[in-house]
Image (tube, rainbow, N blue to C red; front, side, top):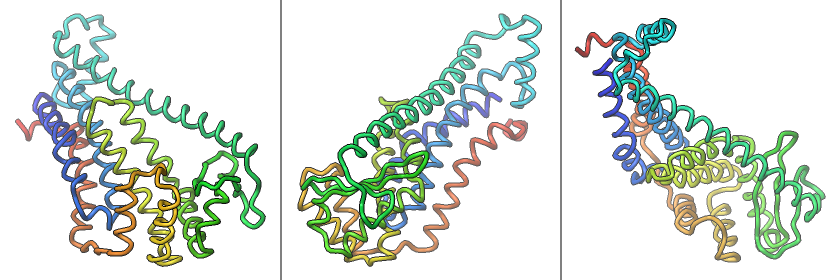
Length: 303
């Protein structure tokens, strides 16, 4: 168990900085956003599992060499009133594993509740300040000259919101591109993916890579939605729509570098080779497998 704990701690360090930093700097991710998104999710999950696992296996080390065996040993010590015999460092590690797990889970639940409340209030405001679209179901029109387009997930049905300013600056084909882009966000449930990374950042606000992951995932989600729209309206139409919206509203919410990257990949696509996609997919599975094996496999072979 001690060797497993050290290995998990080392793996957690790799997942906390060098590995995600390499992914953040990679140039291929913009042209394979789905693969990159899966890799980011794997890094986040494996990182949390490794951090908790390192503390847990170190804390359980006095009770055995396997996770289940040592957990049963801890339970037996608790029933027998022998917890005071646990060395202080091991006891602190067990408390740390429990606190870290609770901290991450509670932040996830809190973030989900908070976002849902914000969406509910936003939905109510949209219902008051907008009118239904005459042709598109579950679509609302805001009477403002600012070009806007976004979607609001809901328990009954989602709402897509457009502004009169958006309709004014876009051609019918470009408007279709925006509609398909927003539709992809809803049907593919991108908001759930982003929720996890927002919660991760809130759980570890001092952790630079958590902020980087949230920003990169937000951009990749936009690119995934772009890929859906581009297959329907074409690359140039979608690129033109993005450019026109930003030109009409330079102070728009999405960062300029994200918009530039989205337009660049549409106008100058660089296909990602099959070998790189396979390697990234293998890495995605391996990142989850490593801490799982270190936690569950017998440790005698590491001795």
